[in-house]
Length: 341
Image (cartoon, rainbow, N blue to C red; front, side):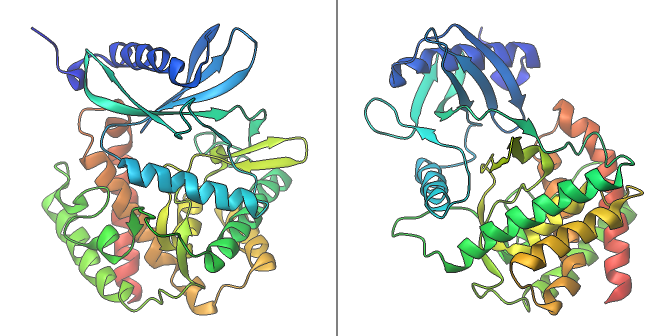
């Protein structure tokens, strides 16, 4: 009797995903000297060293997160950013010219999309898990860099017209506070107490009304990265590349800013980091004053999405670790938001 993939121990799941990654390499005509796991969250990402000593990143996608059309659209946007001079990952086409392969494994219940990226040498700009630390100069450097890079990306988005057939998720009103939000019905999270659920429902209702008033013009809304955190900027000498566009989609630019600030908001040096990011951002592109006053709205909206994320991934180690923290943050933001309306 076969064992359900999601019920397998994490080590067994990762072993099967690695087998799948190895099985996919012939689509690119690549050999393997070594294959090691770099990251496993939504996707499993591996460092591939070929027999010719070339390095690549191999990405095995989570089942069902993106359609084939949406994944191709991700690559379309990455190509457009690269042409605009924004340093992003370079996708290695398969031998047949396609940008990814769909591969099956007898012990994994659904086919998986797999793509290969040119390896980017460098170090992460920082890590949310490590906190901000006490080095004020380093904090200002990291978050000023995030602000500048984000502004460059948003400036491009405000002018870019997606081509026909472009399909990507939207972090819009429906995607954030509609009946079927992108990352799940956050107000149904099982661990919420009655009081917490009532608070979050009230905040959702108020946020939905306020969000409907936010301008969706190209100066405020367009393609966003949606995971603009220090881990997703790689530094090599004077080159900085933005990576991991898995969550990218249409949305308000302030949602990107909220994402960059979300997990550091309780840090003692939060205000320093926030000021550095926003000052650097505004030095590159304008953001209306009304936009900055709406930041608490998008901080709360971001917290809703993270509750939805853990709600739709019950039993996973990450969800179990993050849920209590995310509930506390969300309730605090909800109370503060309702108090200032």
